Image (cartoon, helix red, strand yellow):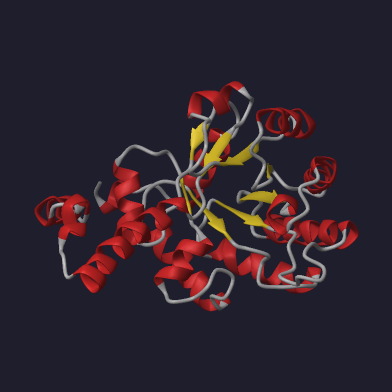
Length: 280
């Protein structure tokens, strides 16, 4: 695709909203420019960053990447691709609604088509913001989006199942509250059972629900669509798969003196050919 024909940020944001209107689409999670361009080449209609995948590539634990570094990463992925990009923006690198509003403004300025805000605190003693605070934070994110033109899609995340509180009733209550506070799409990572997925989809309708799927999962894209899921992401699963192959091959060398771990490696010629063509 030539530079002149590349879609604008506004184009990508319009397309992203359209994708959420009906049907079900997969929004896979690259962690760098190369993985993003490869996923785009496979025909995926949108991409989502992964905070974990990017953190590992930079030598950080998930949740430890400084805000400025994350913002630079978002801008790099947006600039390198022609499809809408949804940002995994964690808890917004902020605690108070005022701080969050500033962070969201900076995220929107990177050109992302959407972004998610979590209700987790990173405090083991109190892993979730109380609902009043969480709703205030979502409203602050909504204000920041609206002040920046209003076309960036806001995703509200309820982290209950990921922080050791797998309470479906609480999860649904939080998602509904985030929707009322201005979230355009709702997301509850960790919800896996079919009946739970159906219950969440019904509860947040007509707003779209994002389902996180990764190994092991018996669900297919068709299964998720039949349950009413609007979009599917995979979080850090692709990055973990890449790390799994790398770690296995490296350990075989270190522990056995064997290079058999390279048996499933991609061809250098194929990779060079792809990136040579993708860079045009």
